[in-house]
Length: 285
Image 1: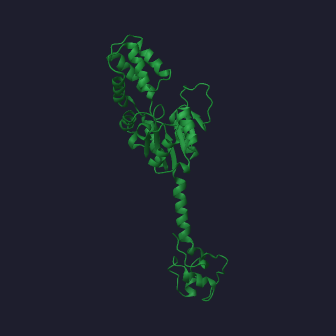
Image 2: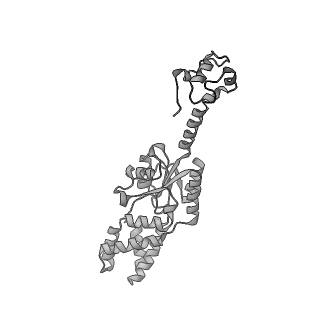
Image 3: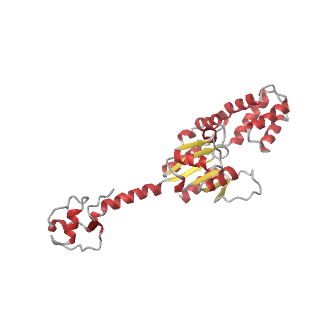
């Protein structure tokens, strides 16, 4: 912190003329941060510009301000935002139908069941087991899915490059995602996203789910910033990502994949692809 020797150091109404007995000379003698001039003759002190006394403080506050203003937070959802979960799911469907020797209509039925809104896979696999009379338990089917899915998910090279550009531009980048710890962490690690972001928060680890603000707080903290400083949330779910992000005090970008037709929203921006969202961040940041 800038040292202050006496109240007179802060009194800018004092004269700045030359002369050993002037207030200026007294000020320089009592100002410890102006060591080169303190205690020297007035004739020598007069060669120092008046702003030199305040320059250390100005530099300190200016640097601090620049550090705060340069830190920007961008949080991203994982599934169907940074990675294409739908594409990976279709790959899993093909493998599942072949492994269980199911009929020709099975693949379409599985995709339709997923599209109908059964994201909780225990419920999903309960219906699958019943439909096809499978011997495996629901838990066994669910565990096998979680083991396989991280290997099927891909993050496009251009998305990885986009994350790198954001970080190079001074952004703190994080992932905030709902899902089981093994499944989501496996996706983040095997796609290389673990090294492409500053931090991540998983509902399966933290015990809270989006849209709970708590999960956003954890993600921001892992990125080394606070939600109080603001930032952005990018995701495809109007409730978990957009409403949750707004509740956390973040501006939002909705990746509209056509799964919420006619739904009202309060997102700041709407895009159809994550790369468009990254371009907005660069423009807005």
